Structure formats: structure tokens, C-alpha cells
Length: 436
Image (cartoon, rainbow, N blue to C red; front, side, top):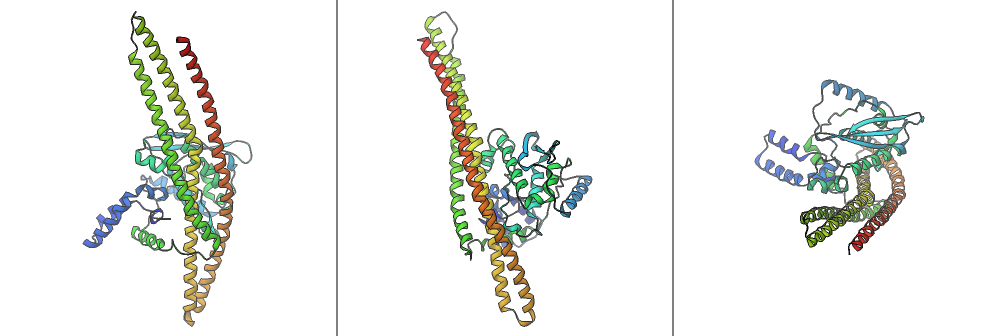
């Protein structure tokens, strides 16, 4: 995991803060150099930035949100919905804001819940899942990955960040959000969080309070954590998993990027065929001249052929995007989520080793206190390792099924599209033979 994957701030916030503080010339120069580099990597930072600036809320909305947060923090709960029935059925757009309609079947089987949520609400849910500090071994959980914030009228830069989720209509993105919610709802630990029940069943939108943190403290923390990344693990199982994850993440990212290029090329071919089909109609001439009339008929037929090619290529691109494309995207985000979990565990390992050293070097007066700290660190680390091993085993099993499913769907859709295309082109061929 790189430094940029762990910095939870917006580079623009840094620039604003620096401009409002009177720093020495060298300090300002150094910080602005760092900020400039951060800005260049803003698309990476946005992937896990859960504290982005939000529009100002009214006092009534803030109070409602605070009350809801208090309810969420009070207790755990059992979901009142079937996790596998959760669906993101629709998306509506109001300016730059997208609202997603989420439907889930009641556990009692007597009806359904229909709620509407924005992306800020999804971030609110993820923030609560991350902040369960009182749950034993929570840092060993591989948190289901939330897709990056959707971009309306996505630019080339945004498409690069969102990948397959930034193409075409919002159906792939809704599918990704649906997968995220289902993974949370069936997770043995995360599903017990009260926030999940509130998110899926409450007709009122959850609170969206912005969590403020000191930017420079986070910078110092990120740099400090960067030093722990290459720390050698004492457990061969986790060291092997870290090495495997590093290689697999790289290969998955490359495969996704190459396949995205294929889909984009298919879309370009479809557009070009559409333009050529339209251009052929410009060659059609009315008149009594037999040669011109014959030429016009050929142009019309060729236009129909290229229009069919356009539709066929668009179908191929959509199928690629909705099957293997989404599968590769989810696989990559899941691998990155595992990498983040492994890093959190490594940080705890370093803390444990430091606690042991401090206990050994402690003076008699502080010996008992240091021993207590060491014992608490050992118990916490043991619990994290226990949960982490279970998560890795489940991930390995789920990943095989997930990739297999996307490959099967891709092949089936490709065969179906090829058969439909063959029938259409055969009809065109017969029509040309009849013209001869």
C-alpha cells in the first residue's frame, strides 16, 4: 500500500489551510511542493477519502443527523432484511447529485423496504463500519470496497479513476453499489452494526456530519505509517499473503486496464460504423437513371449492414462491461481492501514489538504498567490475527466463485450476441444475393 492510499484529505484543503497560516518561507515552500504532488494524485486520494467537503446542512438536519448517530452508537442489531435480496433498482439525477433507490425484502416476508440514498449516505455507512473500535478484531476485517464517488458527465480523467463504472449508463455503478451492500449485509461482524439497519430501512436520510481532523497530524501519521509498510512479518502465513496480494493486485489492475481499452475500442468502432452508415445515405440519389438507382440501392443496403455492425459492437461492449469488466473491477477493489487490512495488521505488529521492547527496558517503577500495555497489545493483536485469517480464507473462496461467475456470464453473453449477429448478417447476405 502506497502513502497515497492512506492519506485521508483533499489537497485543496491543504492549500487553503496553508494560505490562512503564516508559515516560514522554507516551510511553505516544502509544504506546497508536497501539496502539488498530492494534487497530481488526487484521483487516488478520492478512492478512500471519507471526509470530503459536503454542502452545508440546516440546523434541523444537523440535529436529526446527530440523533441518528447517537442511536447508531447505542447498540448492535440484527438485520430485518434478507441480505441477498438487496437491490439498487434506480438512479435519479438532480444537477450533480445522484440519488439511488434501494429495495430489500423484509425478513418477515410481508413486504419490502424502499429507501433513497445519495453517495454521501454510502460514505456515512462506511464511516460507521470503520469506526467500530469496540469490536474485537475489527482491524482484521476486510471491509467490502465502496466504489469511488460517481462523476456526472465523466471526463477522461474520471473514467480512468472509475474504470468500467464510469462508462455508459449508471447500471454498472448501481450493480457495484448493490454488491457492496450485499457484502456488508451478509458479513458476520459488519451486519451487526446498527448503522446498516438504519441505512437499509429508515425512510429518513442518515446524518452527514463532517468529521474534522488536523491535516498536518494526518500527514505526519501517513509518513510514519509508510515506514511500517516493508516491515517483515513474524507469521509466515501473513508474509506469504502480503507478497501474494502485492503481485495479484498488480496483475488484476493491468488486466482491468487492458480490458477497459478493449471495451473503449469496441465503442469507438460502433460509433465509426454509425457515422459511416449515415454517410452512405448521402450517396443516395433520386432519378430515372438505372445506374444511379442501382447504386443508391447498394448504398442503402450497405448502410443497413453497417448499422447492424454498430448495434452488434455496442452489444458486445455492453456485455463486456457488465460481465467480465465488473468482475475485474470488483476483484481489484477487493484485493486493495485486503491490502489495507494486511497493512493495518502490520502496524499493530510494530506496536506490539515496541510494547515488548518498552516492557523489557522499563525501570522497576514503570515495569508493571509497561507489562499491562504489552499484555493488552498481545491480546488485541491475537484477536486481529484470528479474524484476519478467517477473512482471508473466506476471501479466497469467494474470489474464485466471483471470477468464475463473471467469466461464465461473459462467455454466455458473447455466444448469444455472436449468434444474434450471425442471423442478422445472414439476412443481409441473402438480400445482397437477391439484388445480383
